[in-house]
Image (cartoon, rainbow, N blue to C red; front, top):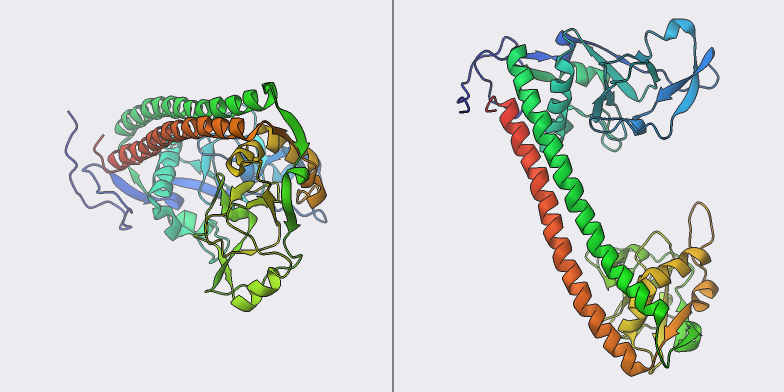
Length: 414
């Protein structure tokens, strides 16, 4: 049976955010129970000594480290004690993802950069409890009150030192941490299974798309995309003059899952729309396509498509013998994406030139077959979306369960 939490006055006067104190627990700040320091600044002009591997904030994940991309910098011999983490030390991100933390659990020491704080507890067993506490404050949003900066936020050494920690007696802490470890292991397994099922559902859909478009059938042909369209044009090569109200300006990011999502679209005036649409005005049923490789691919314009094309977009109008919805499945499926990746240019900002899009090779069966295939894909897509919604709800429920467990842990209810 779980004991009922009892409120008591902690030894330290600092209030602990989000938790009711239990009898026998204390509240201490980080500076009272641990030594803490910031890593070495990366400065080529001042860096001297022997090269050593070092950690950046991108290497620190919640509860573990990503050591796939480790870099080196120079450290003098007398700097090692200040800028080295030993087994059992907690390392916390100052920026990037402020507050994210993990325990260095390797048998060898590791150096760390200025973007990371090292916390070394006087009672080393407090380290896992502290990381769980930081994670709880992060999930609840309460950790943000300790960040500084209006734009890029930081979890500075000064605010970290003042952070209060609820401290149960060590035997009780061991028991609670053991419960959390076991529960989090189970939740991690459940989450991995749900994510795998979600990926499998989507992969099955794409596998069916790929099979249909590669195996094909009698009467099928393959033609260039431009030969299957009566109109093919690019957006104006200038950024529209945006304003708060007016006509939606369609950008690559506004094409999501084969559909337009204009909820966050920028707007332009009627005069700006006239300038941007000087050559051609899109019609209902036209296909809009993102020329930026990192965004949304293709969607069909609905009835009354009063939209302005922003940079990075193009439009094409399928011929009467090409079903627009069939074309969407081709362009957004593995076959279309593969051609987009092969046609993309630009290393830092991959994009597809209009000529590359025009040259896409499109599987082209008779119109009657296109429409039958589209109906089959629609049914499969709906079922895939239903399964995806179930798995996404499961993932959300697992995250809520984590928050509930941590809330019970730090209010003394476990």
